[in-house]
Image 1 (cartoon, rainbow, N blue to C red):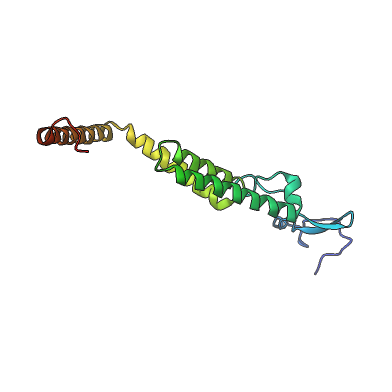
Image 2: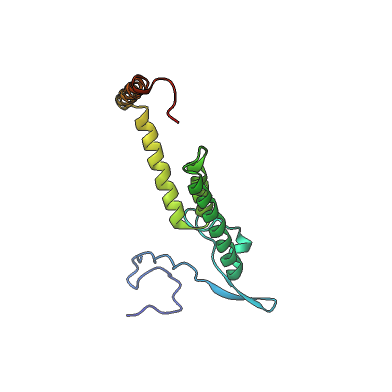
Length: 166
């Protein structure tokens, strides 16, 4: 026997036992909203984490958000290109590249994941660099390179003296 609609025992099966809880409703989809003649898409607020960090008023307008993303892409790529150009020169080439990646990470999830991976790897390498065994090995390699450099300078001075050939 089906329950009567007028029955006030909500959540009860006809036999009087409690029914299983209903699943949570799906997230609210985006819907068009008329805004003074212009139609925009209202999206539900995003959860913190990966994704756009643009202000809410920019995310509300699709065209403004697209322009924002293009601007972030141009600025981030320009900073990374500047860092790549500075790599062979003395200076903060890698720091500028990471700064450009951080700019891209404000808007793009792939850049956020790459930045998190890079931070994890740099932290791991820094931790390994202060490990006493690794430190002793690095010092031994440095000492060997310094000995080779000293032998090379001594051979040069023995062969040609202190005067430069040019």
